[in-house]
View 1 (tube, rainbow, N blue to C red):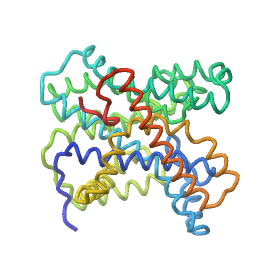
View 2 (view 1 turned 90 degrees about the horizontal axis):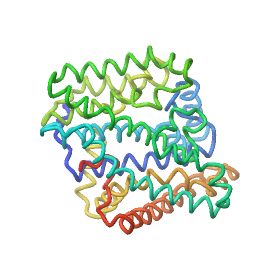
View 3 (view 1 turned 180 degrees about the vertical axis):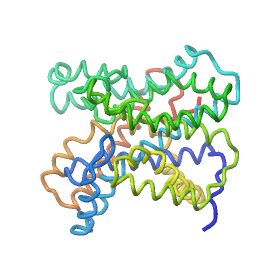
View 4 (view 1 turned 60 degrees about the vertical axis):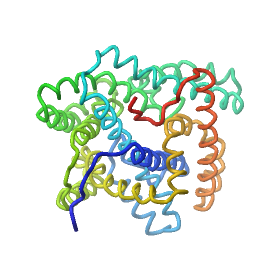
Length: 370
């Protein structure tokens, strides 16, 4: 097996990677609600989840799509963390860094308009479904805290009202610290990069139990739980060429496997899955770009990825209720595909709404570089 020769990610390739990642996330966010089994080792680790996954494949192989999406689909989020670090490093590290405040204003200007229109979309959708009074009185304050990025520090607010919006808090935390990371890298070089990755591992091992016990705070609901992946993206962005040997990729694959059965290995599974899966994703993206129709579809989805991410969490009902009642593999698949179509249409509407309100270019993905 030859080494994988890593080269800089082009804009088009990055868009394809975002498309693949957001599709994995959407399928996961829908299909893991159909049944409690097998679950996923996303924020907490339980070895019985991989056992339930394997038993599901053995006893109901026709349900493989749901099982794979439910158990593995959340790793699409790790791809976005990697691309976020990569994209920001490509834009800022080669140049004179802006002030911390200027950096924050630029990121907020790019990020919050999309979040705002998605929140309006949520209020419209849920008000039609449940009534505006119920939505505003029941979830209004929670929604504001999710928008502001403070909900992850409030246990009952993390996934309410919109489950996937835990990501907003984490990415805003990353924006707060990344200017300091960049300044440190410009001064100390790779020593800081390696130190941050190692520190992230150590914090997951030593700090995570204390945060959980003292503050009921899961470290994976903060940037501390994902800093290693973001910094890994920064490391790759600094290099025009990296040779990933079969030993490196194979070791990453072994560590990823162990992360499904052992709690200690699970703590580094984010980095291991990126190193193991991303080369294959890049090869797939190159193949997609060679086909005109396929590339158009994936480029469109990738450019729409921010809106798809922001709205898919609240569009699951009432389709998911029907899928849960029917509880068979075929219903899971066709309702998920219908859910994807609805999400894309709704995302298109959100992007159009943002353009009409702000009369400006809309962001092209979660890790937009400008």
